[in-house]
Image 1 (cartoon, rainbow, N blue to C red):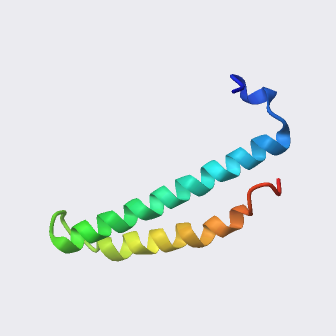
Image 2: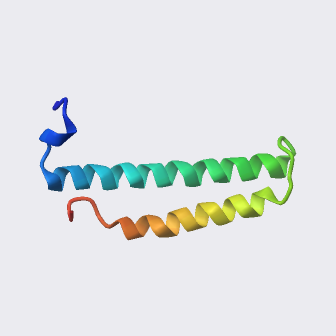
Length: 73
């Protein structure tokens, strides 16, 4: 394993960065869905949050495709 990001080739850096963004988008969307479900269950205060969180999850998932496939850096 390389200890320095700068030692990686630019295409590899781009591929790794895109995959990290994809995984972050997945995590954000999943957590938004969990929070929405908790609000609906009554475990968290609901101030219109479930709909907003589900909208956030949908936007994040839709924009995830804009990152492009890994390996096409």
